[in-house]
Image 1 (cartoon, rainbow, N blue to C red):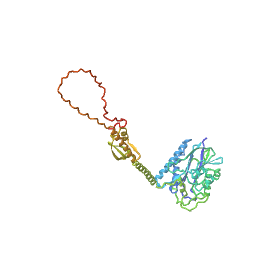
Image 2 (spheres, one colour; image 1 turned 90 degrees about the vertical axis):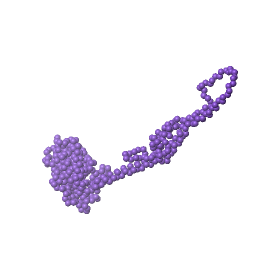
Image 3 (tube, helix red, strand yellow; image 1 turned 135 degrees about the vertical axis):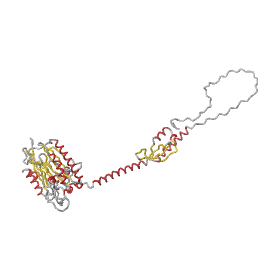
Image 4 (cartoon, rainbow, N blue to C red; image 1 turned 45 degrees about the vertical axis):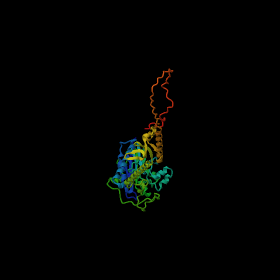
Amino acid sequence: MTLSLDYATLSDVGRVRRNNEDSAYAGPHLLLLADGMGGAAAGEVASAAAVQVMRRLDTADITGEDMIEALAGAVHRANERLSELVEEDPEREGMGSTVTALMFDGKRLGLAHLGDSRAYRLRDGQLYQLSHDHTFVQSLVDEGRISQEEAFTHPHRNLILRVLDGRPDSDPDLEMLDVQAGDRLMLCSDGLPDYVSDEVIAASMASGTPDSVVVDLITHALEAGSNDNVTVLVADVVETEPASGVQPQLVGAAAELAQGSTGRGEPTVAVRTAAGDGHGGGGHGGALDPEELRYAPRPPKRFAWLRRIAVLLVVLGLIGGGGWFAYSWTQKQYYVGTDGDYVAIFKGVEADLPGLTLSKVYERQALQVDKLPTYSRQQVEANIQADNLAGARSIVAELQHTAAECAARVKPTPSPTPKPSTPPVSKPAVSTPPVSKPPVSSPPASTAPTGTTSPSTPVDPDDCDGVR
């Protein structure tokens, strides 16, 4: 069974305000309401722009779960449009709009909601709020800090936490809802529920046609002293062709701007006092528009370029300060290394950055690197870190001591010089009869003569290996 909508919508500027910042659209497949805000920052432009972008969803081509994706995309495009409008005219910085939309495919509803406008459903005499307010007061109710009755008269009930405002974090609530013949749907701006109780709303919606109900609800709001714009959209879910026909209806700021009107009258001077109970008439005790206060949690961004420059300077200052601190730390470090053929004490750390040298020779020593044993020479060539300058000098002293010991050990011991032999004296030959003597055997050639000393002191190769 395919259902259809019989709808009516009406918007009233209210008893106090001179310009209407609400916009609404009703069509066969889309019910849409936007409440602009920002006062002098063109709230009516924001709501009209949101409606003009999102009204394209009024088509039978999108059904089922695809409605959620379509609604999310439409809200995103509307948000981008608000961002473009701010870029075109910086005076619009700070404007925003609520968005509450019901998309209908004949069988189900797709809901998109952002802000404090509301969507209701009356079924079998029971009124149910389909949307969830994105307000400071509603957050207190959700946390259990105040009751729903206290929220109705809370002095800060109109402070919005989430809104369509051109910023990238404007994500709506999205939900698929069931629908059946006999349901009565209602969208409204906060000018109605801020002043009229749910019991009165339910009683008004219980009978009459959509046209009579929208008039009745707006009348209740005005009689209750609403000093805000009041916009109401009512649609009946029916099995027959709707009595209102298939012609879309556009009201509020969107209709005025479409007809070439600016939607602005004389500047509004009435305010709603913070301590008011919300049911009295509007006063004339100040020059602030109450719509200006709705952005209190998110004030308009003035002189954004100055803020960006300030943030950039702070970031650069932190980077520069951190860099200077790091450089100062490196210049308090010392290590022992080589400077050409000599041992030297270096100040800094062994790390070079492009265009910046972090170490330099602090003291060049008279100790030559090749006078050190291999192990010590490798340590110096790889750099020996020191805790401070005194530690570096202590390392050099140890290296000098090692080099001196090795130099003494490898110095050769001189061998004794033999005395010259006395030449033999010639004597006259004397004839002596030969005497027979037994043969004397010569000692073995391999036997060394006794009393011979080593030519040098032995050197421990493990201590001074590699000394040149």
